Length: 246
Image 1 (cartoon, rainbow, N blue to C red):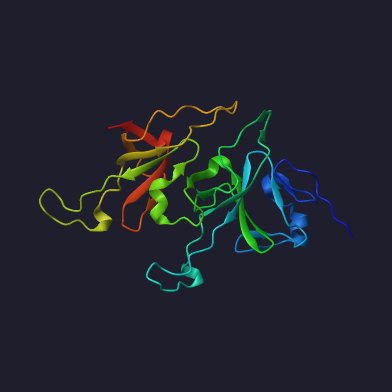
Image 2: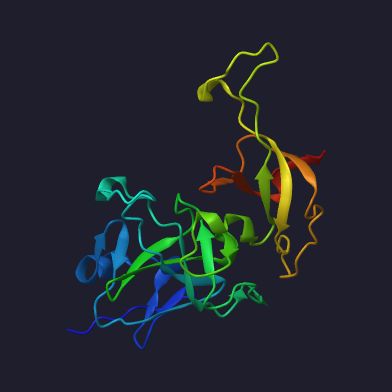
């Protein structure tokens, strides 16, 4: 028996059909042909390629870290969910009545939210991929298989800003040592790099108002926190979450 899918503006399975409604398979088709493995839609083996549509990009997900920096093997339950991957395909840029250009390029390594907001995980030919909007990517890493040591070289996407967090004192004015739980969450830092700006409705970019070297105060609970192996903290926030320059 042959099965057909209606065309969709989101993504196209190579040589066959499309993923309806922003890359989510229809319920009937998913039950007959697909299974979910670790929250990913596993596509049938006959589908070898997925072509994104609109402003979607397709990333091949990086491997999960299986051991610590000290060489200790991690059980599956303790392994961090990968939040980076290499761009393998871009959409056609058609969003509404406009055709937007992509800032991302095939081959670049990107970082995206660990919460998976706005993304769809796919298992294509046994390899994990994720399908998400370009503006849902946090930033571009300088190389494939990048590590936490490369965080200072991250290039933010969209209206995001990479900030080097100002270290908080662990001692009170009276000389008392503060435990980690009693310290205030950092809200101040120095801008390291700035994205191209927020995309307007016509596809153009709004020029950011902050620049590299600015000292800024940002919303307390905003952004994606990152840390280098040396313990230096960074955070990536949307420009609108910056409260002021200091």
